[in-house]
Image 1 (cartoon, rainbow, N blue to C red):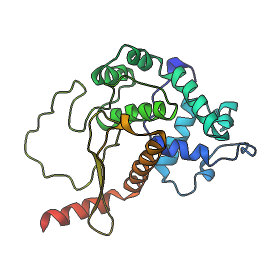
Image 2 (cartoon, rainbow, N blue to C red; image 1 turned 60 degrees about the horizontal axis):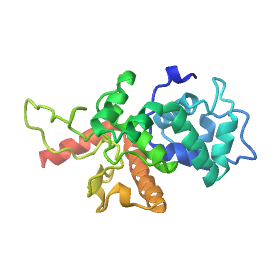
Image 3 (cartoon, helix red, strand yellow; image 1 turned 135 degrees about the horizontal axis):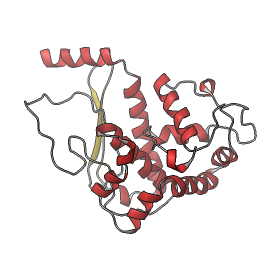
Image 4 (cartoon, rainbow, N blue to C red; image 1 turned 90 degrees about the vertical axis):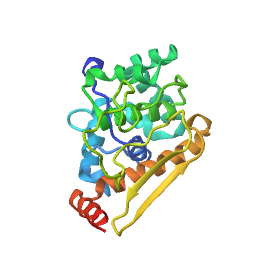
Length: 240
């Protein structure tokens, strides 16, 4: 796929990274397909295959590129190849970063994709996590749009009050503000919340990998929950 045809992926970066880390670089299959993605939800498998194609890591027949093999080799190779991928496909965002661009400018740079709302946030989040994995220093102002806000930073108007959601549906992203937190609805009842009292920029490389891994596990648990089940749980909570 040419750079001009590139559409930014919006899956959880940890899922992408963990899949590549789980491959044996000495025994890469002749074809990368869903049978290698045991335990992933069907939608996650689809997003992962799309992302691999978008970055040219597999072709239309699923054949792996040399770059995919390098990404699977070791941590140092992953970092180097991820930096090359970011440099190739996110040149505009890196240029903005070098100019100390703002969060609004970062969001605007994704406008050709047509993404809005949570999809836009997830696409930006993937980019931020990819840069973190490649140890690419970004503008301190870069972050994903906050849930409930338009891309220009203005609060969205609501025609009527809404009950507080029982389930967060947004992807957590590195941010320049402290006290990040994430809540998911447990299938057996109740909720689980994790929070971080420090800023993303203060985390070490090891801590970033650990924190992002937790967030991605929450995403996958949340995405695998049947919508009908979550809806009935929410209705039951509100009826009490």
